[in-house]
Length: 184
Image 1 (cartoon, one colour):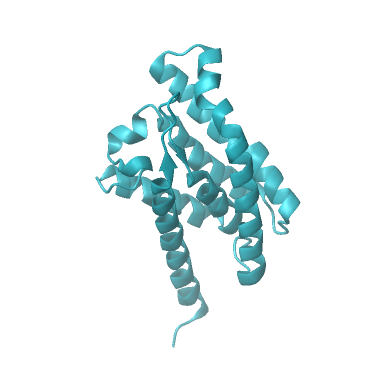
Image 2 (tube, one colour):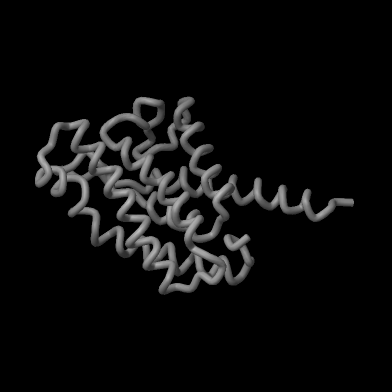
């Protein structure tokens, strides 16, 4: 007979695997933009979904597993890229931002996460951290001035990211209500 601890462990492993799979798939929903080396992807939807629906340990593990399978050569990063070089290349700061976003949001979201609070967290905490980490690394890596960096790393992505935050929040809050996850 399976006890509660074993049942929860199986549920956690399944949830981590599902989120890693969704993150891998979201990396392939990507469009190159001619004025920036950063691809427009649906990854931020899944990053925010992980932050909204998972606890800290499982959320961070999801991101780390994603990084590890990409680092060893599986083509799971945006545009089908892989390898450690991708993690430390021009868009490497965004990878750090993904991890920090999941870590911080899972730590501060609390137990009663509604749509409004979720949108506020994903936009003002999540996207801010992703932009700061991504833009800082992009600017350093490419030797861009502050204004050049702003034009390449942040401004083109704001409208789409706002939509992605609302979408992730809507889906995540519904998942939490239906399955009672993310608040343990």
